[in-house]
Length: 416
Ligand code: IMP
Image 1 (cartoon, rainbow, N blue to C red):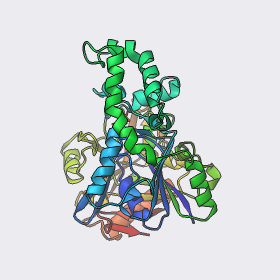
Image 2: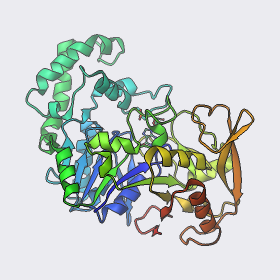
Image 3: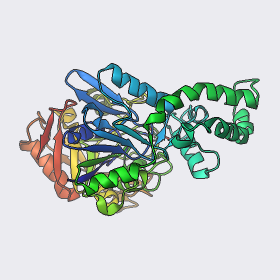
Image 4: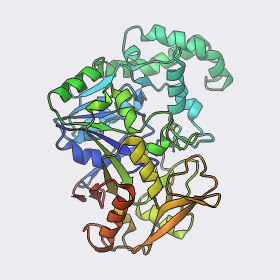
């Protein structure tokens, strides 16, 4: 009877999907609290690989209840495709066990069109920013509840009326299409999806979750992205538009902070980042390329090569503070097998002064200070140099490493 938040400690892609899938075996409910199909959670079971963008990673167990919270933004077409794709692969999924908050927001085709090129931030181009922008703006947004109601047509007409001049100016509206024709086109595209998703929409996610917690159920709150992509606590402006940190689990699902028992931070044994923005421990040499290839460091959502660098302890310490981490799950330790020495950033020098904290506002001037650790050959056993690596992480962060993952499969995991 534990409520656990699973959160990314770095810039996303830490392997949260695998860790959530593993923890989900003993859980009753898995609830995702933020982001949209900018996320790509990979779960490997035997010879099968599942890539999930919206649906919580516990989906592969047939008896678990899954919730998608109000903090999420949803592309209906992608979600419907994901549900149908899972069904085709024999995963039993339907409204009886997947509940979607009526307050989650709809990513509209024009959101995606506006975001398409990735821009200065190097976004995933999935319309995430423009959708959250409308959510914050409030009058031109469409929530999942509005989307599946009979009044959707009228709501869409209202929103298109307000947006049409800007969308035309931006070149999002197909050439020569009138406002009425554009609204009709969107309706034609979206109404079958709304009909499909109707039975999944739920106005009671907070009650469902809080009642389950009262009854002593095991609940996992699944984050997307990572601490440094958080709009408030991340490396702004090179962040996403939501709150991936643990606090986002409360606002994104309707749960009070006092209900949370554990916060598990997922950390890769090295660091990666996709998109633009500062990355002090980045390796731009051959070793970086080797780690990228061995680790398969290409975006699950966009296929973009991920930038690769050494493990950054100040980042993990920062994530420990921001999220209140109670434990760490270390992933992809096998990718560093055979690399010697392995470097770990233990602090920074900024303007000639040493700091052990992550200098989030001075990253342009921060020089990492490294410690070298003897490498290991086989991360599937926690002994020798690999044990020393883990113990060093624990010593420097003050957070116990309770899960070690050394491969993509469920079985490639050690619980400590
Ligand atoms: P957006 O979330 O698509 O707006 O992208 C904003 C930034 O967050 C970009 O640098 C993206 O590469 C990054 N990002 C968004 N989602 C993920 C993710 O799931 N993993 C890693 N990076 C992500």
